[in-house]
Image 1 (tube, rainbow, N blue to C red):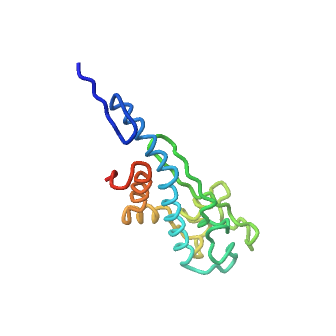
Image 2: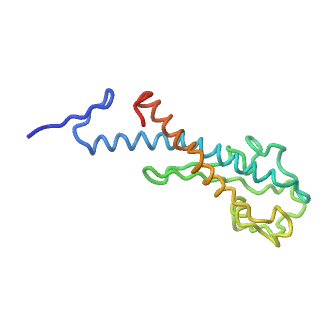
Image 3: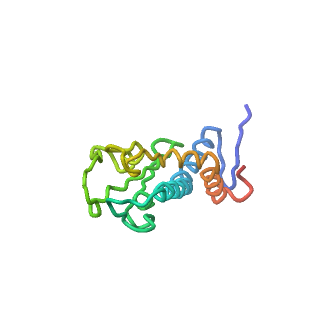
Length: 168
């Protein structure tokens, strides 16, 4: 019988199952940090692009930038990322509706849904541009399909672990 020993840097594995387990743990680590950050960046960009389509007439936005620290839909601090299973990351915009600046609170807004769901599906009578469906999540997915920033983030994260040039 021949015993196979696999070396990866300073680590030694006696079988492929142990190597696979180790690699998946490192991939999950990169998903939770590097990839989550890249997806949040893209989500922020898509949300800001959506918000720049019009100036609201009957409410005020939280800030002119509506990004970091504003509490708005494009604020990365209001986004959550979670590894829901090995190799599967979900990033969710969790911003709440801004009741402080709404002149007509609840006007067509579905309070059983999140702010993101209301924006994506549209709400009320859709007479105004802010009531129209605006799927910034799908825009984010499409942008990531094109620019592959999440893939680059994974590669960079794994290169930090395994060394530059050791990840293809």
